Length: 316
Image (cartoon, rainbow, N blue to C red; front, side):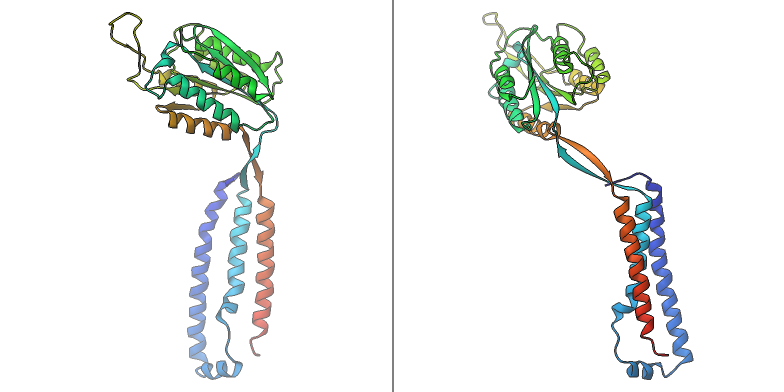
């Protein structure tokens, strides 16, 4: 829950002060009555036993009414998730040579394929899904469609090899999402790569364009600093292929999205599950001031009614 005017909540501090003042007034009145009417115990026996909660009910309702009316003045808002009815998601997956590294079992690329398939399975059927696969250049693409199997076939057909043209792949994904019109549906890109871009346009510049198009790029940096791939030169040591999470984080931040790091297949799977839930729903906010105002007024009326009923029992 959030509040449109949270400063009003400071007034809630007056509630315990009011309760303390009421308790002090009751005790003072009880002492004064005991002094003025020493036979008060006899009168109580004549009136009969009373239920203590009835005496406190009017004050309790009055305090509750005050608290709810103060909360109403703060304009409370309730946030809730609703399924996305119309949206497009592009999966942009790196299959460059470094994705053959085995630091994420069984390999970076194999783990990426498995996690991407689970991600697609979690998206609502009303979400359009597309895919771009890239290495030296973007070499396979599918525009967003309701047939999720089309994107899955792009992901599953990849084989590791070549350089890393991250910027070119993101440019293609943006073009496919826009579809030649500025009035595209709510859209997002999920980029999975080890992050070491070494070809094509600057991916950060593309991310800046994505932000102006209101298309966030969520990035997943896959791999560990100790990742290596076999050296094509016989008897030469393996080639180190550490990921570049800093670049991936910059792409996400510039585009207005979030970056994730995955050093294992389990981590990657959990990230994709989170993204599937996040991109498959939207957060809505509804103001509930009216409900608190009505509850406060009902409590106020109840306090008045209980007070009349209680004081009506006091003998003349």
